[in-house]
Image (tube, rainbow over the protein chains, first blue to last red):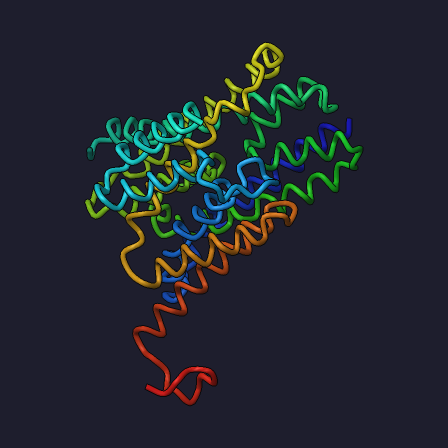
Length: 105
Length: 244
């Protein structure tokens, strides 16, 4: 039975975090400074996810070497992103680079 | 692009690489769930009702280690706390929607959907239907997660070496593609560099704490630098700065 409580508790914990700001949105005006600060959330959180994923692909071992396909693919993604600013093209070239590098090495 | 239906499909389409990136994790979760000590019903409920990849894995690990359910719930709260940053960031856009929209959009909010939805909201066009784009991403991510959990639960043993396929790189590639257009000024670049570096330094912290702290460090850096560039303070108030 404790499994039921666990699932219910996990659901409530997760949903309440996701819903809280939406739920009180009508009563809540964010201070302008906070709204400005929040514009930094997308690049900050995505980089905080990507950098460890690329440099520590298995979560343990540092892979700063050029044979690391994650690092090579990420380099291609940044380069193509800057060059073309086209999301799909960026993803496809990075994936291609990643798999080619993995296959070649 | 402004009609609800085309927004919905655009959201689903733009989430495709992220859906692909989630495939191995969903299958691995399903594969490990029962041997890790979850009942079939609980494994399905994790994906269907909780719907939070990292938290599901961490909770499974705790169940395997024999943790009590209140500890698992508490840990889930900590692991998913980063979603508060997402829902707060989306708040100015979601505010206009009725509760019947806000409830499902909150339930389905994930790292991936946040990334594509906030990008769409920051697009300069004034489409009134951007929430349909958000919804399209949600539905695709959710259905894929259920399907992959199911695949893992029933066929996981027949899909060996899934981790080594490298599908997880699709997520990094997409996130980089979303980040690059933000990097147009020094505060944004500083925020990205500081959060990436901090995330690397703190990656060993449990329960995604490193991710939250790194994000906050990046946000604070960008925001403070932005203010400082707009109104540089007198040199004497900054001990280590040289006077201009």
